[in-house]
Image 1 (cartoon, rainbow, N blue to C red):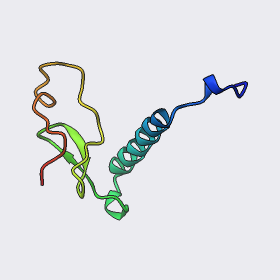
Image 2 (image 1 turned 60 degrees about the horizontal axis):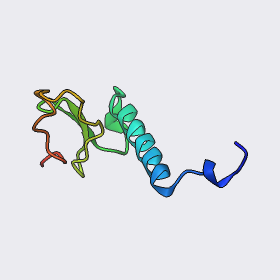
Image 3 (image 1 turned 135 degrees about the vertical axis):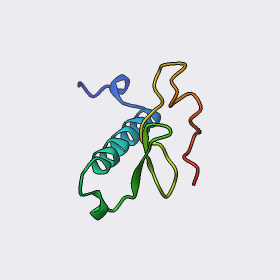
Length: 81
């Protein structure tokens, strides 16, 4: 990178990258077999085939691109408590 302004990422791009990396870290933690000792409370939802943060209901995985996917088609924005 030459340091020109055209090579800089916008705040929105940085936020997308940060959010993606944060979710990746939470997923790695959720898939750890010893996760009960971890600081984040993450669980897997069989109904929607995705991991989520228990406290917030935030999904850690995006919906798939298959329009009629039985897991994703009716998945709410957040996991209901």
